Image 1 (spheres, rainbow, N blue to C red):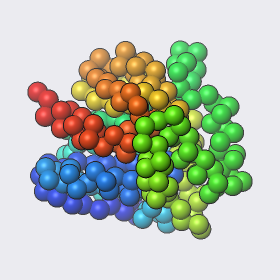
Image 2: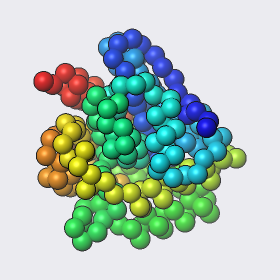
Image 3: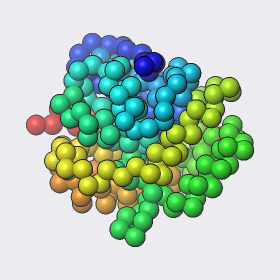
Image 4: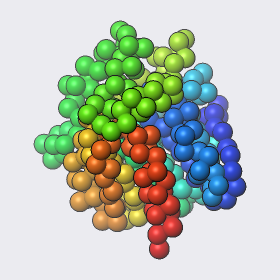
Length: 256
């Protein structure tokens, strides 16, 4: 099985950063310098994205977790943003002994709304977005980046960094559609392991992709989860409010 592309920097406890759909590990670069002072930081490109654009696999969650397991250290803290957070949850569910702490940024155990989970994405909107991506991938990725900064602080700078990190391998754009399928289908709300772990969540108060109420609902079903809200941020609070993000990481990892 092919190995996911990753870059490592720094020394100390292992800290893994997983980016979101349509992006790449480049998205973490503004934070890596500071984080690498205290950690060995692993920036991983998800399958089909960035340096992992040519990987061949079955697009299933089981093989996705298997590929991640192959490239990561035996024990680590994982920070997953959006789709990366969903992969972090699946990894932790299957291999809890390898996760020292799980931290989620703008992510949830279920992304799509239903009657018992009313605050998630609307399924019809996500399906429409998926169709738009099939017909006009580059334009849809740009549109998605713009949605992440609507009515937020530091919108221009955040949008520039989101666009810079886009997974824009022209010949392989179809290889990231698995992420949209995962977002539609994955639901780990009932997993007992995730219920009992100490999970830390960071969410933008103005998130237009995954509303903050989804994070609020998450902490009602995960008994050891704690949520911190960045009031002026959208879907990428670690970009728009990097100092807040770094303080959150420090508090979350060093908490007793």
